[in-house]
Length: 287
Length: 188
Image (cartoon, rainbow over all chains, first blue to last red; front, side):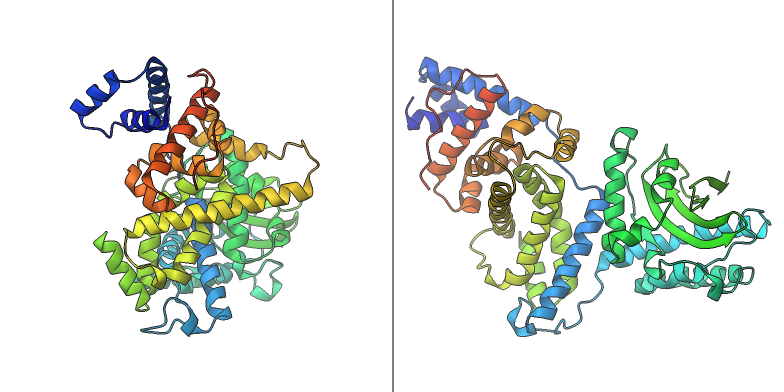
């Protein structure tokens, strides 16, 4: 088979020749070339059935975060005149990008339902949480990046936190070593995944936590019940919003309250409270 | 296409939102190409990230002789080539000869994304040039002319690479007896 025939086979199999010409060319092919063409067509049939690889929402979030970080690095390292955006407003300080605002707005909304759920539990006098030190204020800190469109939600959330803080032990008793960067994570419109892929998704979530919160992995692992809690959210995983609502100490030891919004609970955030040494679930709301 | 140019103009004028919009429009396809090329989600994410950082740094060097997407996919393919070469060097440094460096997790991942995992594995066995041609023409559905622009090679070279790539894939998948002419080094 010569290279001319090879090129014709490529075009015939791709269907890029006009119909009449394709018939004529195909009729002129040697036996060997016809066999090759048939094999290529079979292959293309299989290719047509493949799915295009798509990023998960977590991966998309990580990508955007990493690109934003990379841009910040570029602008730090280079003089503004050396990069591709030398005219117009000089981006010495790269603005928080639009999707961060969307993500943040989604988080605020989720925190809202989460806080209502926790508030219900705390104010209902649950024995599991009554002695618990709370650090709700930290949970709102990162929402400051939500500009404009989420300000009303911010106000509402702050009011709720203020109201809840009245019932909480003063912040200086807070035992959290994690800091505010762990306060919230948003993965808007995260799809459900099945149990077969949950292990790898958990790794993705952990990476997302690490990269989004700009903390090291050791600190992520300090969130003791993270993986247990995430698995507990099944069925209905993937967690859309994952929030350390508070960390505190009660008679049983340290506790973590972890807030979820999952497909399973739809609009309602599930709050689970764990003993952070044993990861035994102490309470869940809503039941 | 004109929308891309408009966004590009805005970005070069300093509008960061325009960059974000460009990224939103193209990140899916860039990732898909990177994923087919790299066959590993983390590596594909790295390549996608690097592609957009290159866009950020070098947008003003795009001369608009082709569609913006053509230029962006060229950056993607070149980024993948670079990363594949780096991977090879790392493996050569780190592993004794004959050791299989395959990451079982990444294999599982791509199998989840493909209806034909055997096809995906066969694709990974192609040389970089054949793989890029087959990915762009057969998986991504670009015309031979566009792929010639993306890869910056004559259209005859694209056809040759696609032919060889398909033949090898068909053979590996058992659709065809071994290729009659063994794959030769194509004209670069």
